[in-house]
Length: 169
Image (cartoon, rainbow, N blue to C red; front, side, top):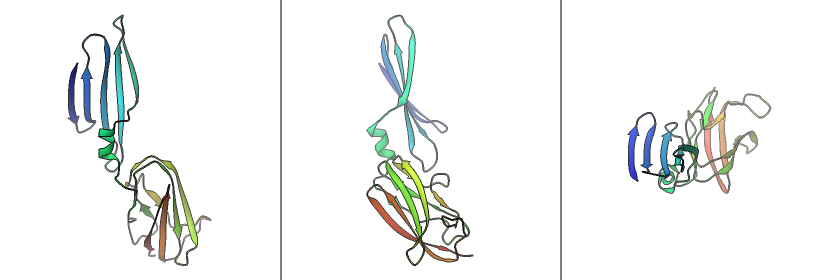
């Protein structure tokens, strides 16, 4: 069996094993999908059967060595950006384990203004604009909120954290 690895700026790291004769040869491909996103890990398994034909199977690999380098050490609610904002903002966070994620926006009097149900999410980094929670400055009923201080709170499994943000018009 031969083991090799390579890095390509477009596809990421690729580690492969090559079997000589009959057997299975896995190839592990680690592909970064975005600057702050999790890494998708794939296993490509080629099996040479007794008649010499090759069959390929593809699925997600659970590889602790690779995943530990991309899994956040802790769940964190980060500062929204921009802050202050008008009329929209993004609320980034990191999850160190899979969880149902809900972000709630409160006014200065502690009333819920908006609930952003992010659904069930896998561990990883939700810091880019396309992955972070997005708030357009509107209430759950679609009305624009007034200028002032608001609070946003994330609930992800047992984790809860609250931070402050300001909307200026």
